[in-house]
Amino acid sequence: MEISVDVNGTSHAADVEPRTLLVHFIRDTVGLTGTNIGCDTSSCGACTIHVNGEAVKSCTMLAVQADGQQVTTIEGLANGEQLHPMQEAFMECHALQCGYCTPGMVMASVSLLDENPSPTEAEVREGLEGNLCRCTGYHNIVKAVLSAAGGDQ
Amino acid sequence: MIPVQFDYVRPESADAALAALAEHGDEAKLMAGGHSLLPMMKLRLAYPAVVVDIGRLSDLSYVNDAGDHLAIGALTRHRDVETSELVNEHAPLLAAATANVGDLQVRHRGTIGGSLAHADAAADHPSALLALGGSVVARKADGSERVIDGADLFAGFLESSLDPTEMITEVRIPKHTGAGWNFQKFNRRAQDWAIVGVSAQQVNGSARVALVNMHPTPARATAVEAAISGGASAAEAAEQAAEGMEPSSDLNASVEYRQHLARVLTKRALQEAGIS
Ligand SMILES: Cc1cc2nc3c(=O)[nH]c(=O)nc-3n(C[C@H](O)[C@H](O)[C@H](O)COP(=O)(O)OP(=O)(O)OC[C@H]3O[C@@H](n4cnc5c(N)ncnc54)[C@H](O)[C@@H]3O)c2cc1C
Ligand code: FES
Ligand code: FES
Image 1 (cartoon, each protein chain N blue to C red):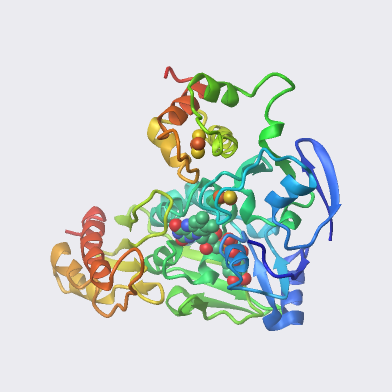
Image 2 (image 1 turned 30 degrees about the vertical axis):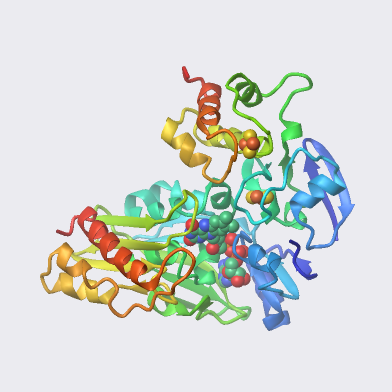
């Protein structure tokens, strides 16, 4: 099936099988490998991207469902060399170790603040419950999100 | 994991979707948010020959005040139900149950109609529908519609009483403005499904109680309700929570543990709902 997906502001047209998962389309067809696959069962959040500005797990969407929609991946956040404030905050707060969960964490965090610009710590933890990190113990991730939200962490 | 091959259609209207269902019958499956269907297709537990994507039928995404009840479009996503002012005011139990579904990413995609049609005893919405006395509107390709009471919607394990060519277009929730309610969900990790859950709603001084994951279908705890109506205290009534239920035993919990959880959580839910 012919689809055309706007990924990070560029339109990508391709002929895909309807069963192609969106995450495979992004990684293999578009060639953007920042979006990771962790569990492939919608549990870990590593594959989180934005569809029309909202965080979703791209292993649990078909590429054909994104036909004509706007997709943003981790590669689309920075403005040239200028990192997105959430990326800056993750760096500043040491919110990553191995980095495997990071693209998904950052995308989920950006979506979280879009919906709730000044969350409490509890709201951040709850808002990120769909993203697993095996390294950091979450504390610094939560700090980063609060810091990006303009809190005094 | 990738599903087996299938044909994909994305009709522009509910009528066109219903026509596609009528044409393909058992071979076809509606896909709303895809957050139950796609995981099952990836595990190859479901393998429809035709997927009819209704996820973008935005005219079926709404929450309206319909006088004595709320009318919620079947394609309304969990996040929109959870944050709806109308739902929070008139059926806060539904808002709370919805907010407990999976995680934010899941709630951005999953729909209320999909959740109810999926008829999963482990899901949160069906219990809220039962406790709130809600119903769904099901439509067919010939334009005929019927209203299915929540009590008649859940027919068996992962089985609704919908005909394969029917589509839920609307969910109707009677208003319970200002009445006591509570939702309890017990799980081990934040985003997990309920090991056991409870929806409790005060209705004219009595209570409607429905349990999550305690029976092959979503189920009302009728013994608890009868005890409350008969004047029992919340603690006494909650002792009846596992009565008539046939919970399963799995990796998370044995039958006995589920029965125990049902009693403890029902007591909490009743008390939090203001039924002492
Ligand atoms: C990681 C994860 C965690 C989750 N955790 C929870 C949880 O904690 N609690 C919970 O309750 N749920 C949970 N869910 C399920 C989630 O709520 C689903 O969104 C929901 O069960 C199905 O809604 P959907 O719109 O995605 O339906 P789909 O997957 O699109 O469809 C499900 C079924 O319903 C049918 N269908 C869909 N729409 C209609 C309609 N309008 N009329 C008739 N039939 C229809 C489809 O044909 C299919 O058989 C979770 C899902 C995931 C992926
Ligand atoms: S890879 Fe998608 S949630 Fe884990
Ligand atoms: S930094 Fe390693 S998984 Fe999160």
